Image: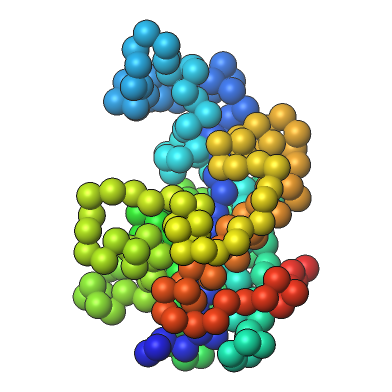
Length: 239
């Protein structure tokens, strides 16, 4: 591989709508959501802007980031380790500030890369948009302006799997199972994050789910590059 594994930061983000329910949105935001939802409703007989509000977290204008989990590799061969760290909280601005500080420090030496599943379409632009909303500077590694496509330090396991075919989307779990990568069974999936956050206020549960996705992204990247996978006992969580 031309990219050193220890120079890649694997990451995943979890997002939710900015309000705990459609009824609690300010009026001006309700109006804006009504317009957005009109393009998202698939079945006008069963869906309304209220019923699909849980999907608002997908859109940076209506959502917010509640967890960023990331991982870096250490060691080589069969003894590779993946060190995980999560940034979670109700205060999105503080969360993003802490992540940005860590990211800038990590990028201070050598050519570094970011890797996520569907990161180029979701994680990376969503991070940039929410940084702007929160009046925070965008870390250099996330910036696209002035860069030629081949100079952008962003890796995407979904893009790697497409091999130039852009007709379909392959989920992280489907790709992992296709490649024979064991994923940790969890009690929640992405569709339940909204409920776990707003009803249970359980950030630790969400962080655990997010960290497991980071492990899966890293394993897929290794598998697609002919590298040995990380042993479960070599995954460490840093506080």
